[in-house]
Structures are given as structure tokens and as C-alpha cells.
View 1 (cartoon, rainbow, N blue to C red):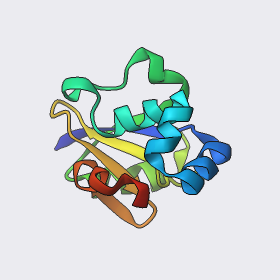
View 2 (view 1 turned 30 degrees about the vertical axis):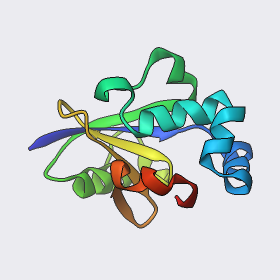
View 3 (view 1 turned 120 degrees about the horizontal axis):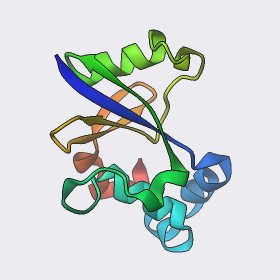
Length: 124
């Protein structure tokens, strides 16, 4: 089984509203938290994990052994011993396959490869 880590987005409603109003790029220019979010979402520089500076905007939910990102998503939403079942993962949460540097965005109805989505990130 592969190991996956999941990070919970802590941007909050205010910054989500800003992103919805002016788009990802403009919001990233105005708010360091949004810039940090985008940096993590696309794997950081050279595919590295979250930087220390980004820590206030993300919380590591946990690491699980799973056969796929979807399986990791299910486990962390329904079976995680840390009690995360009460808080459904949502748009903006990040999942990473440990060792590969591949980040996926966890959306309410599934998982999307961030590299595919960042082309038109205003539409996320």
C-alpha cells in the first residue's frame, strides 16, 4: 500500500470569498496566505512539501496507508482515528503521495490532479 499525507486548508471563509470575487492570481498578489496555498497546491519549488512559512495556512490531518488517493480521502473522512470524520475534507485540502511529490487537490466530490487544474486556476 502507498502512504498518503493530507493537509487541511486553513484559509477560512474571508479568503475564499476574496478568491471567488477576484480570482486566484489577483488574490495571491494581495494575500500571502493565498500565495502560500497556491505554492503548496502545485508542489512548491522543485516538488517539495509545504514550507515552514506556509504552516499557518495548513494543518496536517494525517498520514494513511491506502491503495489510491480516493481510498486515502475515504479513510480520512470516515475512519481516521484522530476524529476527522466529523469534519469532511473539502475544496482546498491537499493530498500528497509520500515520496512522490505528487499533490492532488481534494474536492468535495472527488480528487483532481492539481497540475491539470492550475492552468485555469480562477475556475477552481
